[in-house]
Every structure is written in C-alpha cells, then in structure tokens.
Length: 201
Image (cartoon, rainbow, N blue to C red; front, side, top):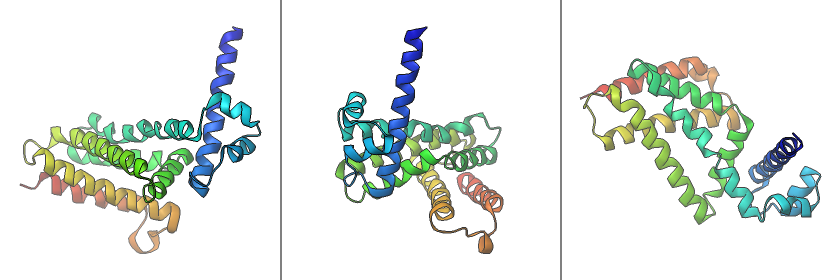
C-alpha cells in the first residue's frame, strides 16, 4: 500500500512539474525558460527537478508526447453513421479538447517554436502528417471511392486548417461571432461544406 501511495505521489509531482514547465514554455518560449525558472514556479529545488527530468529537452519531449491526446480527436468520427456525422464529431471533439488549457498551451508551443527550431519543425510536420492520415482514415469509409487517398488527405487538411484557424482566432485574437455567427453556426457550415466537397466526383 505504501509503495502504491509513493508511486501516485511521484506521478502527481511529475504531472505538476510538466504543467508548470508547459505554461512557461508557452508564455515565454523554450530557449528563454531555464530549469531554475521551472523549479521556482513549481516551488521545488533544482535538485528535485533534475531528479524527475535530466534536462529541459527531457521535459519538452514528455510535453510533446501529449500529442496523442490531440490526435485522438481525429479518430472520433469512426463511430459515425455517415460522413456529415463523422466530420461533425471530429470538429466538436477538436474544439472541446482545445478548451483544455494544456492542449492550448501545447499548440502555442508548437506554433511559436516551429518558426525558430528545426527539431520542432520536424516534430510538427510529423504531428501534422499523423493527424491528417488519421482523419483521412476516419472519412474513407463514407467516400466510397470518390476520392483517392491524396485527395482525402488534402480535403481533410483544409477542413482541419479552417477549424484550427477559427479556434485560434476565438481563443487568441478575438471572438468573430459578431460578424460570422457563433460556434454552432460555424461548425454546421464547415461540416456541410466539406461533406459536399468529399462527396463531389
């Protein structure tokens, strides 16, 4: 019982350290954040931080591994009955996940760091490729041969790009609902537009 409690305490502390580091990376950048700043934000000593993570790169790697949570959003359509329902589930799942602060911070890190870090660019392209591939797989059963794989990937990329751009504007720039309608109207129109695009011969 004691070992289980210790393991839970260790896991909880690790999660807390990652959360503080992720926030600092998102707000001020990876290069600009030191291990000392992470330790201070977590109210632990540097020695304690190094006990959990050998380096800042190790922290970043674990933060980026959280991408699987975001990628799961593109597979939600697999339980849909038709293409429109599939796209609707994917869109709503993405928007819901991006309401979680950790996913928004992860996106902020990836977007800001890809402009200045070659390794992050490589990671982001793999992340993008994986997401688009899963999305194309999700819609494929409803297309019935009307689009080849490359065409499905392109359309899904356009679908997700529009969705991400909308969400980014709402959360980081300003709510556009005053001149384009609210989220519900946006999702309905997006899904309708791409349902027709995927089904077009």
